[in-house]
Image (cartoon, helix red, strand yellow):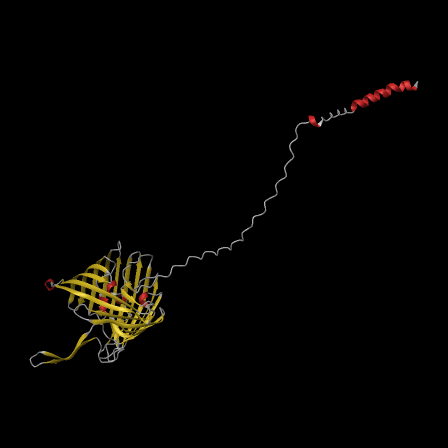
Length: 433
């Protein structure tokens, strides 16, 4: 009875269990016989063995790097040519000879205002100069010989030897050349803005002399320039000296006549100059042909002439000068003061003369240079006074080496007998090489 009751219950549990299980997979179909299977791919061939390695050539040595291109050899020093003059020189430049020249052909008309009939017309080879300069044995030993052939005279202007102990710092010069006094005198004859220097140049003791000096090459306008020297008191131009003997018929005879610039007795003359330059100025030329920002210079010169004879030639002078250049404009000025011997002793002196000059110009189109000048020389005892008022125009054909100048001036003299005025007109051709 108990079995009958449990049978339906067990049957129901078995049915539920079998319903929850997944169905068994179908049995795999039986493999077909080999004859019925499709063709199989042929078995893979074995890879052929690799070829033997080729022999490797030994590595070539690396080529050395190409050498850098050699620098071109320096240009050979020319043995002859032109540079501020014609020159010849040795290969090592120890010997050099330079030839330069200057010619000034001048025409002048002078008309006295009070007596126009006394008008004077002149034409002259005002200057005809040749100079030979250079160096010998070493660049430190330089020389110059300059001769003047103009105005019917032939004489030596410069003849000096210079040795640079410390080039540009300490040099010694002996011979004849310009005393280091007055900028307008030290400016070369061919570097003037006017046909010639102002009247102050002749009124004060400037010019050439024979002597010895120490300097630092002031011609090149170093930042600080200086020069000091002792001179003989000679003059640049030869003079006629003779003893005059009156003849019975009234004709004068000359005894022992000679033409020379050698004084019968030396008159020791001591000269010093010190100055400052800025802006790389060319301090000893008047035109501003290089142009540019402001440049200038100022300097002080002193001179003392000692009289050893009875000629009362003792003299003391001082002057201050300056130059300013900027953008083609140029201006120069100077003031002079001198005393002269009045007693038996060389230092028994009294104030003698005052001088000044100022001029200005402007370079236009690198070819035209108009300029104006005023100069004064006044005797301090009131006996005379000289004025120069001038205007000039220069046509620069090839710089100042080839130019034509025209100048007009009024020369006014006030003296005890009144005021006298001369009108002066000059024209001048300048050729330099």
